[in-house]
Image (tube, rainbow, N blue to C red; front, side, top):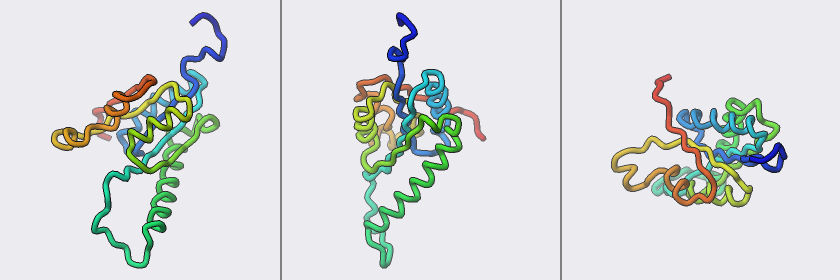
Length: 159
């Protein structure tokens, strides 16, 4: 880089897609560190995977719309707690988004809409037949992304 002009920052907008599982916390460390280092804006994205249909699932006296609202509010509460716990120090520059859809598709849409310069995400822990049929979200994002993707493997420590 030829200068210290703020407009030449390598990363201005960082996207951190997460399933809010323990394994994604390893990637959160990198997202937080890069956000601080570059003075970037951090966008935390959680996608509720709608690819799995709840066929045969029945809740008496509750419409599917009400069920969706309850799930979304529960998801929003969990994401807010997750962000406070992991990104409390960068919350001024942190935005959280919850969407429903196919995770890799929604991640790539948000990356385009929010002018993302870097996607930081954890790698899933699928293996065997599961991986063969479904693949990993990280792999799909990496394959189709037009911006750099940092994929962080889960740590081997058992806490």
